[in-house]
Image (tube, rainbow over all chains, first blue to last red):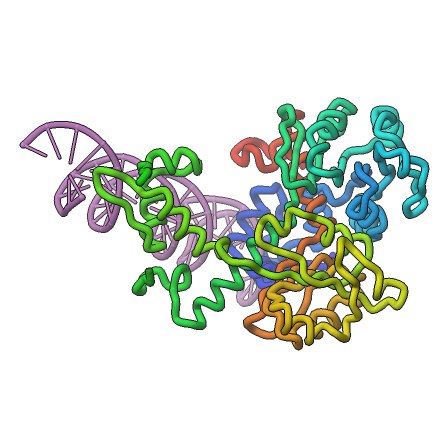
Length: 199
Length: 199
DNA sequence: TAGATTGTTAATCGATTAACAATC
DNA sequence: TAGATTGTTAATCGATTAACAATC
């Protein structure tokens, strides 16, 4: 039974050991006084809390470049998110194959969700279609949506939506870049709020 | 000169009006007592702080499905991130056209970065290539990198890297889903830390 | 001048962490 | 038993916000 102290765990995680002990305790994960925490026990219970010990079958909606990239990405399966189905509405795409999966018409969504136990839908369609697709997805009983369009979705309570917006990511990136450059030049917008502020 | 009060701005932003006044003040953005803040003035100066009033020419490395999806995405240009070049190393891809851009060999990167004034490189290659590409990008003088591979990159000080990992996004999504489901069932991992904790 | 609203101080709130009694 | 380390209390720190003097 390999044990580690909260001090060791905290150093790995880059946090204070008191904070770590308190957080594990709040999750119902206990250690042994004088000994430490059992590694396997911590891993298993943290995994339970994060939902990592479970598989979340995924369906990708939209078989364009982005959709195909997602289906081809082996990393998803490795991390517990196997892509089990791909949908589109274009007759040119329905019936084609992507990474061993045949693209199906969106009409078949409810059926496939039920039989495959789909828990996550990834929306990789043009923005105009996003809300309609979301409605279909929710109607089919999928409880979680990852939205790659720039539009925000309206969904009923209980459905969880997360948006990944490429433009926003670039915005954040360029903000940090600008800030570090500004600091080099002696500007101090955020880096030193106490200093003099330029106009 | 259209003015709004900190109260109005705070309501829009969903924050407390004292916090808003204090934050604007820290950014060097002032209002007029008894009147409020000049809308144009606030927009312009917040834009300056965020770097939104500037264009950040982008180069996409990797002309696979993900790379092509990024080049095709019109939203980037609209938000100030025009994609000016696409690179790959595969002879099958170099010379082909994506959204009006001819895919160039990665060897030409330094030249193109200089002539086009590229400020952001998006890495959309297989994970194995990511570090080599990052080295090339940094060598060419690009100061910001958006990394779509699952691997984390080592870069010199001053280069800003941001990673977008699809598996991590799904992880976060499924965590929230699980938490809301657990709450429905009466479990209380995070929703009510004061309550009894299940084992 | 009277009313409104900023800019900032002082009070409050919550989160982090030092410290130590409990206990393996 | 002596040493180590947890679990938690109490102190500290920082961030948020109420309140109000300054002032347009």
